[in-house]
Length: 281
Ligand code: C2E
Ligand code: MG
Ligand code: MG
Ligand code: MG
Image 1: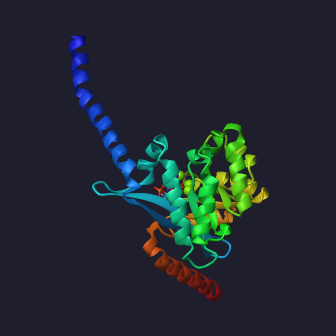
Image 2 (image 1 turned 90 degrees about the horizontal axis):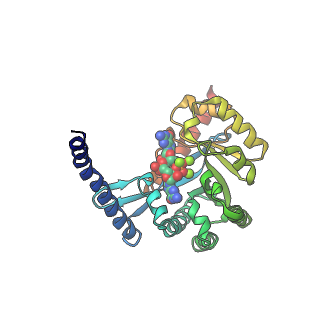
């Protein structure tokens, strides 16, 4: 009887497993062609400077416009792209595209680009970044690269830190992304003179953590961005707790490049209104 049950279970589960392996193969096939087909797009999410209430810049966030699946979010394909080694070429496209776009924005606005761990081991990151800056004419100080703790954890022989330093020497800003979600965060923070720490959005409602990280980051001369700010209350608290920038749905969701100009205008107007409100009140 138990044998029959086992067989039954086997028959029950096998098609599902086959389907997921098949789905993965299809995704992989499409992903290999996506770059050549021009199916990637960058969306941009604003970052607000909390001292001045001014727009500081945008983070570039990749999307895959798939003809059948629609707009695919990065968490659904970046891990596979990393696994397949495609992230190197995709990452080069991202930095080129982001620099070209940012070069059209008002001077002073920065663009932040996410860099995957594998890009550091490829040996082509520095030349890709230099090339993107030269082609676009974007001043290096207006480009920021975001790395996660994972990239530093797999840093064999200090290669990643060496390249981060080379990027800083170019005048590019370097920030530590998703702070607090990885393993051994404090070690990572101490291991390199980051320009910025981005506190992961899972801590937006944890004032004790935010205050501690902000105090530590500030004492190390770093700027502190709060990620995932969704309410006015959070924004006020994060400002009081020592964050220097805020990013989140409260300001705006990530928008396509074509909507950036309108967003710059809207946030500029918002700033004007805040100032007036402060003067009147
Ligand atoms: P990340 O770099 O930490 O980016 C922030 C993510 O949080 C974005 O998700 C953004 O849309 C989302 N977010 C922003 N504000 C809020 C909020 O108020 N509430 C909530 N719930 N979420 C918010 P997205 O665009 O889906 O990107 C996810 C991750 O994919 C990024 O996390 C980053 O690690 C990775 N990624 C995105 N673009 C690239 C890229 O060009 N290259 C690489 N290597 N990774 C990328
Ligand atoms: Mg990021
Ligand atoms: Mg993040
Ligand atoms: Mg993240």
